[in-house]
Image 1 (cartoon, rainbow, N blue to C red):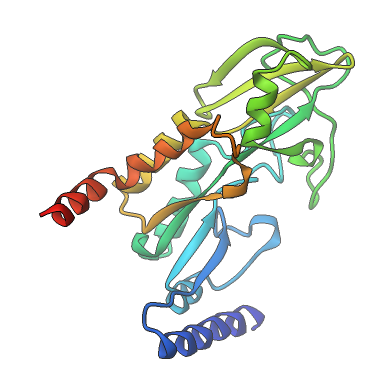
Image 2 (spheres, one colour):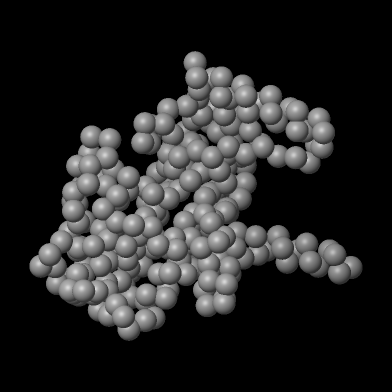
Length: 244
């Protein structure tokens, strides 16, 4: 009942706003999958009907880790495909879905005794909703902050930047005060793959969380180019029409 009341509230809010200006849009944030993520159960189809678009928060997808308790990608490509596919299965129009992506990653402290150049970083078991391992063992780091660490000498980065092909995500290790930390995040390459998928499946749009996580000095400007994968052709055609 509460979920249906929420959908009704969104619908009424949308009606009021669009009576003032038809260009106003009402969006609703939803989890990366409709399958009871972190206990969130809502009438997804009704929310989609009530909203102009649904912003699918495809990040923090490791809030419950059911396999090995090790560090991993914040939002692996395969998880995105699975989550978005479940919204499709419900009959929700892809044209109402916006793929939300993280402009931040996670820093995980590996357990004592972990090798500085390890690929697999065992992490402390921090329970969440009945599962004994979660991403709460790490902390969120902005994309700008991650790049600063990657290109710094303190802490010492060991092994260089690497990429996990299964999760389609980059990671690296750094040692600080004798503790090995593993950093996982999305970069221009991984985001481009996601945006290409979003375009191929005719999603409404893509959008990061959050713009403030970039470096004001522009050292992470490459990430802006990923939007060209989704809007490049249309933007070029629009510019051509405007110049005529």
